[in-house]
Image (cartoon, rainbow, N blue to C red):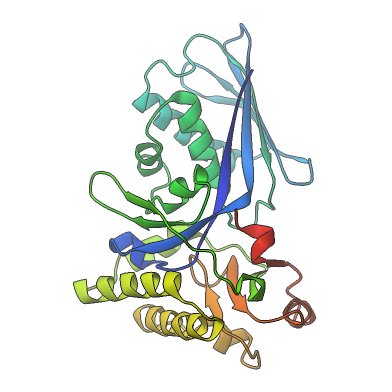
Length: 299
């Protein structure tokens, strides 16, 4: 039996702009996803995906020749899985040619949260097949690749998308005010691929890319909560103008005393909020039940 593990991710700065080459601050999460493979002499691949509550949420049976599905509980997810497996084989021609077996994936976070259901799978498959995870990502889901960097990282990092190989820099981001930072789930998952396609239509200048990078570096160096909040607010205002979208605080939490910043694709998944011990209660009273501290989430 072989086993692989990858961490989830959160993008704290540089959402959207990371696609154009700006510096972005990303953090690996303590929660991730594992993949186990047990081979046998069959010419069949049995696939089982288990969620954070240990419930089987997806299964499929595929033949090894062309990964055609003979049985599954979700054909849409099955089609995506086949595309990824074919992308692996394009990069590694002898992948799963001889022996079949059973794959079992186990997720430690709710798969609707947007913490990296896809990226942790890509990373685990790349480790298993010994292919370049960034190439596998580009040949399957696409995206900047920051989530792939987080999958095997042990601490926060600065990510920069480059033509041939991404720049990944481990950074000293351990804010003294981290007990004032909270991650709040907005009760809906945003389709990041759709958001990426929409953003591609934007005309972004070099000065805007440089400004996004400057905000990332400023966030990392912030010494006080007040300074950190000021930069978060600047970042929200900056991206809001580019997207022509109302910031989430203005839209949903106008009476909130602290700062709120969207993470990743705007309109879903998680936001970062600054506050105090009463902050979780505020969001829960508004119907947002998943509120986690920085220490609970970030590796």
